[in-house]
Length: 486
Ligand code: FAD
Image (tube, rainbow, N blue to C red; front, side, top):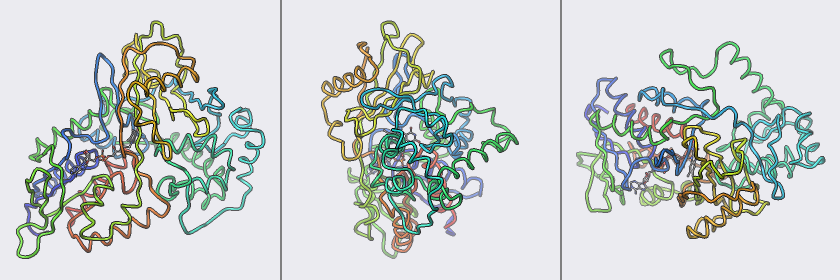
């Protein structure tokens, strides 16, 4: 683009949209360009799925609660926003995770990495899987390798490699929880591509996982770990990180920085139509808001849920790649207790509930044990998840029925009888995108057509490449780089 003062509209004020706006302003400044950025957020608050509630000394997450430390874009963003000192890791004493089996909490077998058994002696000691199931899983290293070109579902792939029982009792609760999905419908290439690569490169998941462990240990010895910058103080040694005052910290810092750099943020600006402007034109796109207002822009970044992007783009192109992405609704039930009378030792980070157990709760985080900053010393905080693919009706229970059912599950599984001091329920309807088999190829085709039909318009965010917060930050930054390169 020759015009040095380009106008860019960013649709959506979640982490992807705000990252895109932040990096647009930052990168343009570094290049000596001027860019007018306007974020159009449809609701009355920024953050999208990120939403921290701070009350009575508790830090309560209504959506995501942390991010993977090994994926660096979030840490780099924190550094750029001056937030490195606010990062905190999980409590090292709360390592244990439980899985429910026939109503009893069984400790997750040791020697499992992402569900793959790397230490057969330790794995053989678990009661979670039958003897036959364990032996079948360990045979995986002797199965022939695979180099299947076309995509597969995660469930079909893992069942073929590790056996059905391991999928039901270990992989399903462990992996499906990330997407609240059905492993037999989620595409492998889009969700866990590393599994496919391991088998292609090492012949089996077990050999591939062991190789990755050795590589990580060697990198740690030579100091080749997650170094962010020489200026960054030592990060907490933790697989997951968050901010001591909650994830909304990063949203608040992004908002402040975007405004300080001259960016414009509009709330309650719900976009209902994207109109490409025909020649002669002053701008490439006119964005029509629900309230009748209009915003003109030379370039546009769409960071909306797939079903919203689908509606806006359908008049201009084939949107079948977006309509193929189903969304699952979930609810988040947070219970706060007085430590006095709680009557239960939280000796781990929480538990997972396989589908076959037929409970309302799909998983529970023992938040005050896992994340020490989240509750005052004399309080306890428990978070329960409700709803997953093919099992979403529980999300619509009214507050009273949901609280009673969740407390019933906690009583049965943990023996927790205490009366909570408060319960916070958040329903996140259509919040979890389910990448179908073939998603990666379908999105590549969609983007190629988008570039042709609507030049200067980019679509990105959780519906596209990956749902994790660092992935969303990376996607926002990539969109900013792509826009500035045009
Ligand atoms: P969103 O956050 O959905 O933002 C999209 C924005 O677009 C919203 O603000 C919305 O209001 C706005 N919008 C919608 N329609 C319009 C319109 N027409 N016009 C203008 N604006 C509009 N990830 C992790 O890494 N760690 C976790 O612990 C984790 N836990 C999760 C727990 C839950 C319950 C959920 C739902 C997700 C979790 N995730 C987690 C995933 C992660 O939170 C999301 O992938 C990420 O926040 C999505 O960010 P986004 O900006 O792409 O989309």
